[in-house]
Length: 323
Image (cartoon, rainbow, N blue to C red; front, top):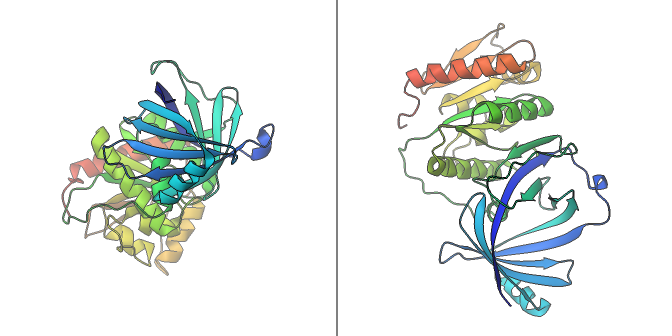
């Protein structure tokens, strides 16, 4: 029998958790998605190969309408075979939180169901680092992304949102990304991509983020990745990645924050023998572009100051112009 409920849920991509942080083996979930003819999300889920649920969700963001019905396993497998995208994950439950470890990548997603959309939610102490993606990223998106089913129209020229890219060591990038999400609520913060996806998936992910940012009215994007991955993070269209990350960022408007000496050394290597004094600012001539380099590791205050100054500068330079 079908059951329809209001699903009120917030979602985070988390870092640093291990399966050993949870009791028991968890639940293995295979999830497939069918074509969305009516704009809703049609899904089949098989849990531990013993239970199957056919579901449909409508709406986006924190509150959606969910209809579910338990069906037989044989029928569920037939439906799963017709799905255009799938994902597999192992789910653990702790303190009222559902935590999914995705098998197709290193993604760990934590979800919290609520009674009301206005219910305050505080991350538990065992979730140390997390970036909220409730408003723009769903499990269906992750399945589509992994299967390479995300395509966006290549309508050039077009206006593009300003992208702020953080480059540096993994922990430095992540901590800065989380701070910036709190500091700049009008920005759409893209989770750390380098650890999860290859170049083609990174580019699709950030294109998805940009499309959702437009719908949400976000003023700019903040993403992070290693220096070598800058090409896939800043280039706006499929097939445009450059082998040299410097060439990529010089040809596309973006703010690149070098957070530590690790990133600075990568830049020095990419630019070969050119000398880069402390406080170096490189202005590309072909597009609105800035690389800000700090010789010492960024503190929270330095990061906020640098980003505010850079955004103020680029807004004055008409960053949103078509290219």
